[in-house]
Length: 239
View 1 (cartoon, rainbow, N blue to C red):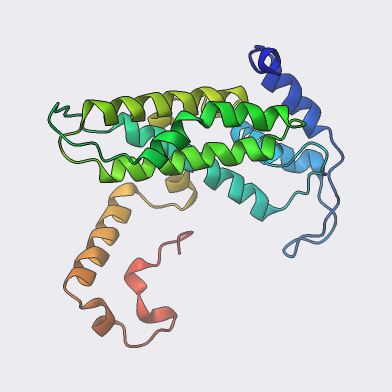
View 2 (view 1 turned 90 degrees about the vertical axis):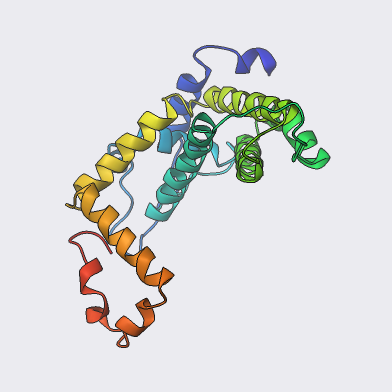
């Protein structure tokens, strides 16, 4: 399996084979009729499709739903956000700074690659391997949140190695192949285009809501919980 995982065309070949699997027909609540394989695949981004495919063990049928694709997209975004968060980390190494990473966290991250390979060697359990990627990203995010303004050399080294491992393992499955910040920026721009509102408007509304909460005036401003309670926040295509 180790040789297979290092093969250049592994992800391309496997994902193409996987998408040819017979998807279990399903009637979606918001659609009449049966799921159209080809029609749906044309609307799905490659990254979302790969995460969707590999999140299911290959012996099990792939069952399409809009919710499943939304979950795949959200999962992919979480992985990219983890990498982007590290790239934006304000590094201030201090030899005297205490370590904030627990032994359990260090052990989990240190064994990530080994456990990933064990999962793939276990009858190609890609679903378990994907779960390990999310576990690693969750631990990395937790560590970055509690890093002090001045960090120990040990902590910075662990985080750096862990992010490198996370990216390398994800790329085996064709994930995290784009620059993290670029991916998130393009996705943000796509969302703004679809909801027909500019970024400045969203920022202004968020600031207004934050300030209202801060001053504890939001509740008093909207005694009626009906649709007209927050007209200033209703933007076409955005709720």
